[in-house]
Image (cartoon, rainbow, N blue to C red):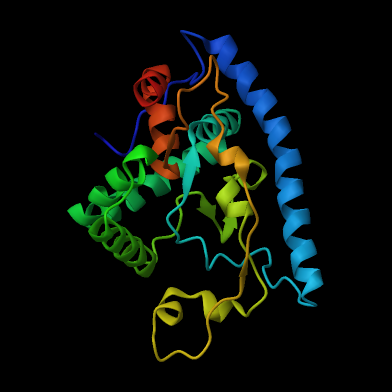
Length: 237
């Protein structure tokens, strides 16, 4: 695939375009409430510990983590970009460089993707779990900036994935840096707060999903943008 991508003039066109547009508009409106709930839950936890959030706009230290999102979120992000062509152009430009660096990560990463997306009924073996944890650590260590990061700020903040919104720290930013996080001799580790996000496992999507469809967020969004409804059918069945 050419990762520089060719995005149609109208991403949301053709089959089921009206349904897709309506879904995205409703999903984004609902997601704002969910993001507000996530923030409230975490801030209550932090206040109960008499601590303070140290995350600040312009701090993008954690924006090198492996980020998963469900198909609903990725469809809404694609819609958000389609409505903001300047953001879309910036994403496509950054995605090309990011993907090239990803390809250099080797087969180990792609094997982990297969494990991450396996039906939960099959579970993971002990070896699978070790491989998965080590590979995702390796991805973190590579310090690949998220392709949605623009001038140290999230270009899709309003519709950012739940897992991004569910990440608050009360420790100095330096503790979050990969080179410190994984250094056994570095004395301090990040103090991270999170909450439950049942919405990530949602099966409510168009006519309904048999099981949650979750993938690597940047890649899934890119494929929706460039392959359209054909990719939706392929990924959801």
